[in-house]
Length: 339
Ligand SMILES: [Zn+2]
Ligand SMILES: [Zn+2]
Image (cartoon, rainbow, N blue to C red):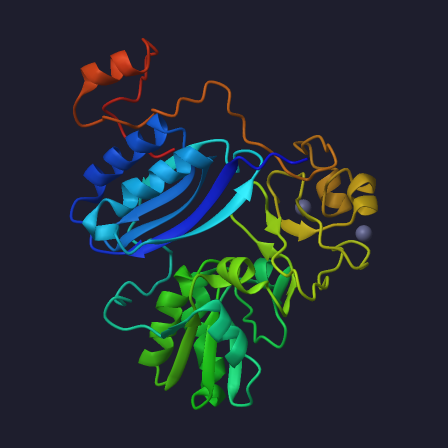
C-alpha cells in the first residue's frame, strides 16, 4: 500500500505586497523551519507557489498564508503524494508571479468570470462555447481538453501576440483554462481588454477540475512543475493523446532529454528511451556531456552541500543565522542570494 502522508500544494494569490524582499525573507524562513520544499515566487502583485511537505507541515503552511490578511482568500489545490515533490526550497522575488508581459493587468480589478469545475463541465459542450488552452506547446501536447483550441507558443509571455489569431471568436463564449488557474487570471483579462465579450476561466485550473469534477474529457496527462512531471486527472474517460517523439507510437511517458544542453521535455516510449539512452536524438545521444540514463528520464540536480538557509538573513540577524544553522558557515550571508 502506498503511504501518502505528504501533500503537494498549488496556489496563487494576486495581492499587493509592499516590500517583497522583506516578505521573501520571512516566508523562506517559515518554509525552512517547517520542512516545506518547492518553488515560490513573491512579487509586488502577489504570491505563486508549488510546494510539498508532510501533511501536517502543509497544514501549518496553509494556516500561515491564510493568517496574513493580504492572502486570506488564497485557494490551495491539495494533492496527496508519498514523498516530497521537490528536492529544495526556492523563494524568489520577481516582477510578476507569472512571466506574462501583461504587467499592467490587475486581475483584482477585472478578469474573466470564474467557473467552478462543475460549472465548467456543464458549459463546455454548449454550442456557442469555445475552450481555449492558454498553456504552452509542451503542456498541451501532453494533454488538453477535448475540442480545446491550443496556441503555438513556447512560453506564456507569447500569449498576447497569439490573440490576434482568435479574432473570429470575439462573440463566442470563451472558456480559458490552464494548470492551476493563475495564467487564466491575466489571459482572460487580456481577452476582455481586446474586445472579447464573454470570457470565462476555469477556476483552479485542470488540477482542481481533476480533484473536484473527476477530470471528464481532459485527454492525456497534465504537465506539472514538480518532480512528478505529469499527472493523471481524468478518472472518467481517460485517453492517451501524445506520441513518442522518436517512433510515433502512442505514449505519455514524459522525459527530459539526457543531453543537458538540450534537456527537452518530450514523450519518449520505454523502448526508444533505452535505445537512445535517454536522449531525444542520435545527436543528443552522442553529446559528450550526456547524463547516464536510469530509465526514468528525470535528472535530479546535485544537492550535495545544499543549505536550505542559503540566502536568508542577508540584511540583518547575522548572529541568529550562525546559531540556527549549527555553526555551518554560509559564505553568502550578506551577498546576493539568487540561486
Ligand atoms: Zn518510441
Ligand atoms: Zn535532446
